[in-house]
Image 1: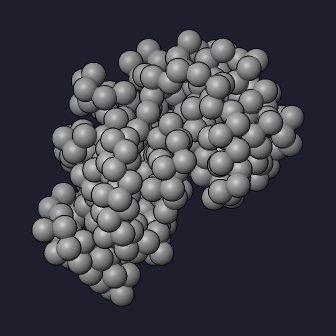
Image 2 (image 1 turned 120 degrees about the vertical axis):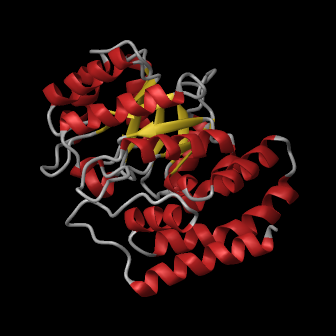
Length: 297
């Protein structure tokens, strides 16, 4: 299939001010940081954006702010999934009206559904809008895995289901999606350590929370691979990987915020009860970033 959406998508961090409210001005700077680095799209209200800690009204504020700040420079993917079909439809239709380019749907969590119930939810929400829809497969959170056969059946039955973000960390499953189902669905890998491998294998792209922190380097790896310079991409990835590993080896949401703050863009603390990084974990992230910039000049 021909996909309009490709490349590196930043799963945006959501900054909070000292009172715990969304820091709109800093959010705009975070959006610009990724776009200026050359990413191919930005994602509002995803997992890295602490969607589970946001009210519905905050999610819509977040989505609207990102759409306005992107201002057509790159596509905006709005994550509008919810724990009920009615709420997911309400959020999806509001995001469509606000001007989102693609909707991403996490499936209901907390009370695990059957696969049949999950498929019904996806169809109902996707059919309530006209925008392209990206499935969001994260079974560690939802308790339901969207296997490749199910994904294909959904894409064939519902015209606007166009993409999937696969955060299953199941590399065999990811390869099946990339190699056997690209005619009906564009696959974005959402497990950042697989970024290089996914792009080499021919994934439509990657959705990376780490792109908040090191967008220039991730974009550079993507472009080198697209240009066929695998040796150059591998060389840069070898320097970049320790940062990705450090960010993923400690609590991820505060790690991304720490990475932003260490580079002059204070994103505030995570929303409680999530805590800031402890001193040891912060030092690990700081050391990894310092080593990267020393190695890449």
